[in-house]
Image 1: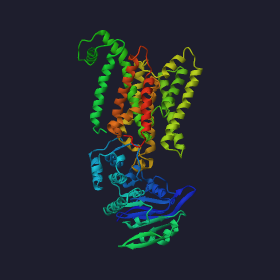
Image 2: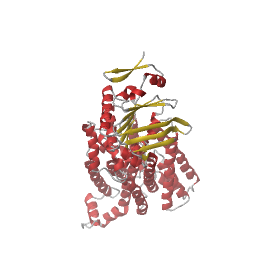
Image 3: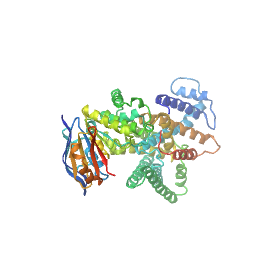
Image 4: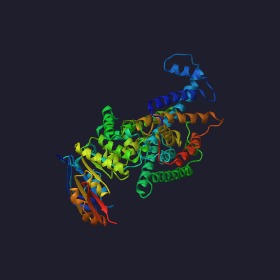
Amino acid sequence: MAVILEARALAFGFPGRRLARGLDLALSAGEVLCVLGPNGGGKTTLFRTLLGLHPALEGELLLDGAPLATLGRKTIAQRLGYVPQDHAPEYAFTVQEVALMGRAARIAFFGAPAARDFAAADAALEALGIAHLAGRPYTEVSGGERQLALLARALAQQPLALVLDEPTANLDFGNQVRVLRRLRELADRGLAVVFSTHRPDEAFHGASRALLLTTSGAFHYGAPEAVITAENLKAVYGVAVNVAAVNGTRVCVPEF
Amino acid sequence: MTRSPRAATVAAGLVLAALAASALSLGEVALPLGEVVAVLGNAVGLGGEAPEQAAQIVWQIRAPRIAAALLVGAALAAAGTAYQGMFRNALVSPDILGVSAGAAAGAVLAIFFSQNALVMQAAAFGGGFVAVALAYAVAAAARGHDPGLALVLSGVVIGSLLGAVVALVKALADPLNQLPPITFWLLGSLAAVTPRDLAVAAPLVICGLVPLFLVRWRMNLLALDDDEARSLGIPVAALRIAVVCAATLMTAACVAISGVIGWVGLLVPHAARLLVGPEFSRLLPLAMLLGAAFLLVVDTLCRTASSIELPPGVVTALLGTPAFLFLLLRGRRRWQ
């Protein structure tokens, strides 16, 4: 499978405050990367760097083989979809209008959405099972439904890769599991997916890779089983955790 | 919330046409609506018997003023809609951001130095743009505060600073030759608008409207967080500057001919949003129609309600203050 998102010897952070260096990542179509780390560990800055919203301090980022720094915002938006954390917007756009915004990079600058853009937005809503919400105000649906609407917007971009900032943070347990299943399905259909979370268990729910950031600038990267270990979690979060297996799926159980 | 935008817009257009015809018939000399229709029909070559006197009243006296009310109302509403969308803040408007005060300061300085209409327009635009740029820069620098609140407060503060500039010019102005026109104009009035004023202001308003119509759909994305909008492929900073310029140009063009008429740019976009939702390409035309209708009604009241002419700014403030308080108290979670 083609490598879609690649970091070579990446250092990210701010001038005078580097958060990590020497990060090598390669994410192919069909892969899911789970990013973990304590508060202040740099997840947000890493994501902003991956999205080309914040300059890398060192090294190189490649998106579909092209250096990210040389790509315009429109080209990046055609290849990379971003799903921010659920937020309360200022205005009550409908769910369909939110999904349509994903078409911005595929609509002429002075244009408006055409039939094929509506079709793409509706297809994304359909794929996520929220087509029935199309006409509802985005501000009045539940947090889980808003998260799905933002995901639909990213899918309407028709990207090669998705970057999701804590997609399960504000969801109830059932919706957390459903969103992670969706991500796995999307990867199986050929997308590369990066998501962040505060729950190490989620690295075992469909992710093929895990990245564990620390506040010291060190990081662990590799298969989830190799990264999410009792030892690493203790070192990063400072709490004792047992990693056990239940029905073949690993879970992290803190010691009390 | 009504979600049949076309019906709402068509209805607003029809209401506006009816209001304009009624406004032509109302005044010191009441003209029967039939005569007004005949005069208008004559003008577009439909023929019909129109009395000479009626034609004169319609074309010489009432039409320029009504045209000014429609132009200023529509332009202020369009500017307010643009500012509210672009700053992700439904409590801002040309007056709250200090744009009107800045434009007024520029225009008053131009009157003080006895300049012509074009210089006054340029000075009004310069003043308005400086005001909104300052307000935005101060709000952006005031981290650690609620950004919406910071923008409103910095706009109010910048506006009062520019109000002091206006006061200084008034103190320095020649009390016989300069002060009366400055004071009269500052009250906000459509009474003195001449066809020549309209000929200067209308093209400027159109220059501001064209870019807004071109980016009418993309405007929606400015309502998102900057990072989000950029990740969707929007050049946020460039688009925002273009939209600020367009909205400020329209505001300044209005202030230069009519003085400061507050509240239209704040309230009308809310009313339009209630009818068709926040989607900008539907919102903008309706907001302009409602703005034109609102100011037309206000101005017609001003010139007919009592024997003396009332300043429209007084009437919009009387209507606007309770409406603003209502919006504020209702909370800011659900701007429809």
